[in-house]
Amino acid sequence: MSLANQAHLHLLLNHFPTIGTIIALGLYLVAILANHEYLKRACLGIFLIIALLSLPVYMSGKAAQEAIEGQPGITGGLIERHQDAALLAFVFMEITGAFAWLGLWQFRRVLRLARWNVLTVFVLSIVTFGLMARAANMGGEIRHPEIQATAATEGATVPDTEWLQTASIASFVNTRAWAWPATETLHFMGLCLLLGVVLIVNLRMLGVMKNVSFSAVHRLLPWGILGFGINLTTGWLFFITVPEQYTQNIALHWKMALVMVAGVNALYLTVFDEPWALGPGDDAPLTAKVIAASAIFLWLGVIYFGRMMPFIGGSF
Amino acid sequence: MSIGQIFVQPPIFGFPQTLHSGILAPLLPIFLMMDFLRQLEESGFATWVRESNSLLAYPSVLFLHTVGMGFVAGISALIDLRILGCASDVPLGDMRKFLPYMWAGFWLNAATGIVLFILDATTKAISPVFYTKMAFIAMAVVVAFLIRNHVFRDPLVDKRPIERYGKILAFASIVCWMGAITAGRLLAYVGPGVVSAGGR
Image 1 (cartoon, chains in turn purple, cyan):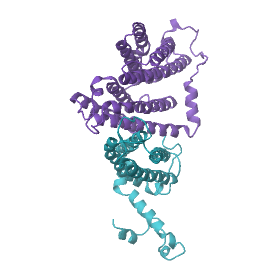
Image 2: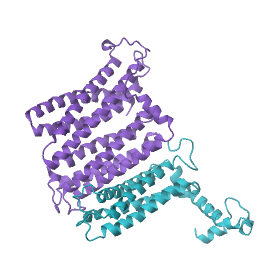
Image 3: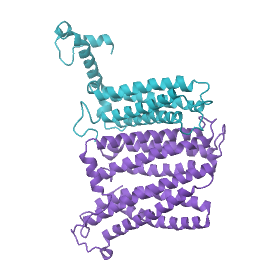
Image 4: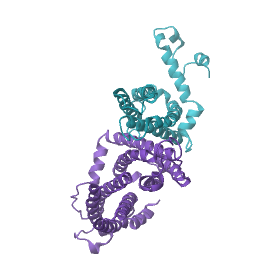
């Protein structure tokens, strides 16, 4: 995808993490006050999907920066400030998503949401919304001088006082010989953990180890999420460290698209009644088998496009 | 090419024939081995895999090697975690059904690994990192057999808690595969044949 298209994508998608989060947060508050379990779970699902959508929002933001940097009226400092604020908001968004997933997973097991989880997600989503709104506001200032709070004129430097500085993370990885290989090694280990869970859980649906109930293999899912978390973190370190080889990498765009579809697919295994009802010896219905087979192929596709990034996309 | 043919061919490295009887004679097997590896490296197949721009060449071999890694190390890790006590609702007697998938990954990687080896056989053959990786894999395979004999073949496996020995084996298996993955990655960064920034 070209830089200009990604800039458009950024403008389109960047409203989900802010507007989406505040709407979900409002619904969540109503659900908590009314003690409506079903609505609470729906909100957790929405938080999870927004967390997934935040991946392309962050990535396309970097491409948008490359597309408009150096144009008249664009202040580099404002972009960098927006980027650091967005990174912090992104980190909180993903943590919120992880806790939302954990709540849904636990609900499936005990048929009620844990109070601690409901409150944790509530607090995290408020913090996330605040950070997202702040990042969004800074992003708006890049193109709209009329709303600029600081009298930043062209070329003026904006003091960077963020906790999480993209540039310092990148220079940390770049200046240490061990950092990049260590990150890659962790990325491979996370891959093994994730693929191991994907294979075992989905092959059960396809009939291997049919004597085992789905509720037993459901216990393995958090290990897959741990693998995904390791790979999201290490993958993000790669992206932050050398974004220029990824922003226009078509293999990475395909990989991220597949990650999002596979993520929604994983929601099926976590919450739906159909797989959960499979007892020892039960054969899964056809739809469940189709979803299970597609999950395996989606993750193999993720690995394929990840591996092809140096060959199709031209990264190292 | 037969082993006999290797012996009659002139050494590619150009060592004098006196090598057969001189002071360096004890090293002859090493020179012959390096010659053999050089011939593998220069074979048409290795050259095609290494230098072709086709996605079916080197990229596909790497992809299959990665998938095989996910199968063998991933399923092995899940079995090990189960032995260590995670997801104890899943009977180990049933988890055994995944062993063929684990071994399928192993053989896929043995095959693709041989291809990756012959692409730069003479370099890999003198790389300590490569032998470290092979040692970890050999240990992982030995541990996998021990787990099969002491855990999966135990008729009472799901009727009593796993013995301490079984848990030590499971832990060792995780360590071996992590070691193999780490050494494999370091092949691109440490040792002979690495060009400046390695895999980057």
